Amino acid sequence: MQTINENLDIILRSATRESLKNYELTNEDNFLGDLYLYYDSENQTLTFFDDVEKELFSTQLEDVHISPEADVLQEIINTAKYALRGLRNEHVFDKEFICKPFTVSLVNSDFMIEEELIFLDDQAMKSGNDLWTGIEKELDEFFENLMQ
Image 1 (spheres, one colour):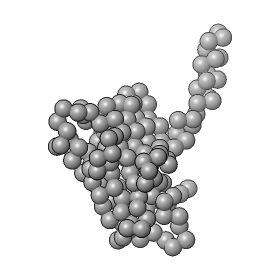
Image 2 (cartoon, helix red, strand yellow):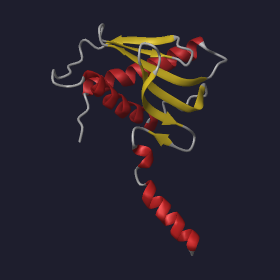
Image 3 (cartoon, helix red, strand yellow):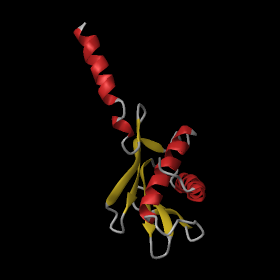
Image 4 (spheres, one colour):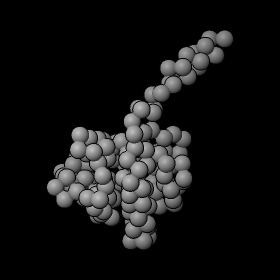
């Protein structure tokens, strides 16, 4: 089981909330369809952007302790997925200005998606491999019921 960096988790949750708040304050009549995170390893900065690549919030990660042997980007990805699932469970993404389906993705400096961190719509949530967990059993039950 992977461990979660608690300090990074707190920072990511807070920064996500701030990003959404900043979007809501500056975009009264618009809807947010995606949120993008960019990690600048040179400056140790995590920046949140909206779906038109407008910066919403930026935070320094220099005070976050990441073990020297850890892959920093992978630790950010793992912790972000965990934090975003937690925020989803707290209904942070149930705001009127958030258009679903809604994704939060990690991007590179060219805004190319490196990793989808969470996908939300009104019926489902997918984070990492969560979508496929248990699907085989559900399909088997469905076909069994169908054949009866």
